[in-house]
Image 1 (tube, rainbow, N blue to C red):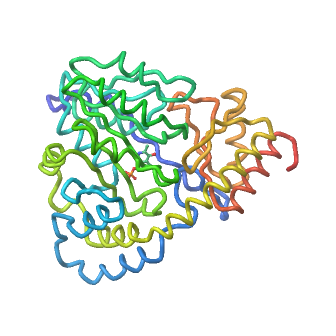
Image 2: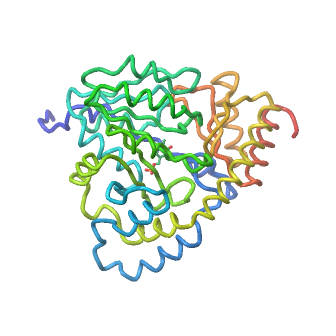
Image 3: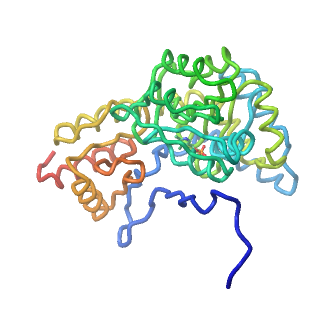
Length: 362
Ligand SMILES: *Cc1c(COP(=O)(O)O)cnc(C)c1O
């Protein structure tokens, strides 16, 4: 049937997002290390707040998220009016593309950058522009070489996913200051909490009128399943994003759990230090097996194999042994596997299993 019904331009170019696999047929005791989730789950404080909020589920949620924004502002020393909360930081990325990029506009991201940047740009009808990295690290000069009068948004995750690498604040400041006047620099700080003392780019937001930071409760806070994130930026930009935000985009249980979680900085400390310890252990164990990785600043390691075939064979071997990691061929890294840093037992099991794959016992 010939149909005149067609979606907006760009939408059919979107490849569906591939989530981390969570089941292996025939295995009950599966370890899932494919989605960078917190191995310790969510903090008890957040679970309690979520359960309590269930008593009010017949009521519409509040629309301004004032209590959560106040808690975020207090903990991070930010201005509450310039915080916006969304259904994961994914929704903040969507708001940015929807509000600032349309047909004929360009959205810049980097070679191994997070897949949502491209998806959101295409959904808004804009043209995604992919810029090369230098040895798996964001290259500011390459980005500056690619920006044009049509560039509206530049997305950088810092630390980056799936590489785990970071680019320094001096470089990012240079980028913010050299961008053309119509472009916004978006710093995605999904893994910022894993870097001790790092503000995710908040200082750069404070000192520039063209920088926005996004953050999430999905990673160190262990709330990926209830979908909540936030953004911070100049007042004019946040006011624009609030116009496209659905008034009831977040439910009370989400808001309550996130508020409890952000106030639980003791939990964050504990998860960060345990992640740092096991990440170093895992990187070292893999190195001894002849599998190098860049120094990761996040809660995963990008293990580099000798070839795409070896990476795939190792992935299959791990699956046969009930361990799920992430293939990252879709991110231009076919010879790599991204392995989330689990708890100590999971780290030991994944290293031991890769050792057996390599024909060595560790
Ligand atoms: C996991 C991740 C996010 C988080 O997305 P949510 O929608 O908040 O769950 C954002 N950016 C990057 C780079 C990520 O890896």
